[in-house]
Length: 329
Image (tube, rainbow, N blue to C red; front, side, top):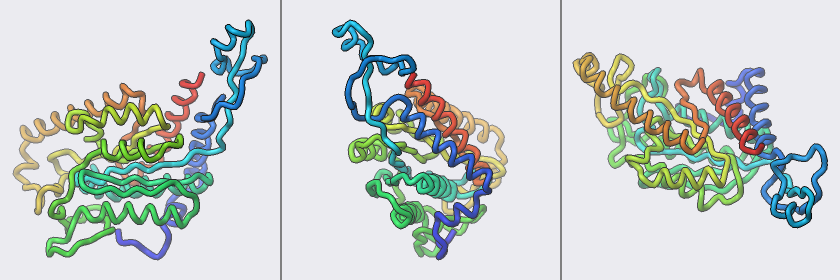
């Protein structure tokens, strides 16, 4: 999808129906409220407990010293920065189940979240990385800053492929079903641990961090440091994971593979035994990834298509809101 003069944020607004927009924006509002229930990040002072105060704020050591219940008072933050943490490895240039280029879905997720953050007046940051490249921009406000971050992400994702004739297509995300590009020579593999490490070490203020990757990541087996940084990041920030679904390894919808210069041969797509074997391996990997995320109590969602994207993001934000509320009780 070639960039147009119309801003990305304006295109998002045009794609969203008003009821859908209200729902998604409302859930982002709810995320702020849930994160801020009872406390912000900085301790203000101690005061005596009064009926109606959150019992979770009671400082039991101070209460034991004074002989009566004492609670902690915190400075309340009005908003949280949004950090888009995006995997730009070569598997992101594969196909989604409906034949759409996964980069188009990943970019649409980033565009939509950036738009909602701007509606809230939140600052926006970007970390986009793989095994060889890193783009990092700090959290700032303003539509111009958001547009710049989204354009950077578009270029990094677009550089994963070239045209068969060798012409590069930076920033050009494929339309559904398009097959006129191939994986660029030396296109880097994913390294989600690098994305998580950069967010953890460079973005210290508590934020809503949205990791955008695919269903093969984060995987502690192929990327052992991913589990370590997931643990650290989920303690530092509000962390959620958006995974872009892959097409079946072999099957009617798999017209191309990012590792191949041509279509997947029909005789392979029709080999039921091979299809079942690859499907089982893919299912086991996805289950392993889901188990890792669940073990850290990290909410995650798999986006299957552009049509379902907003509903799936809204579901994710709703679950994150509920989980945050439960943790703070």
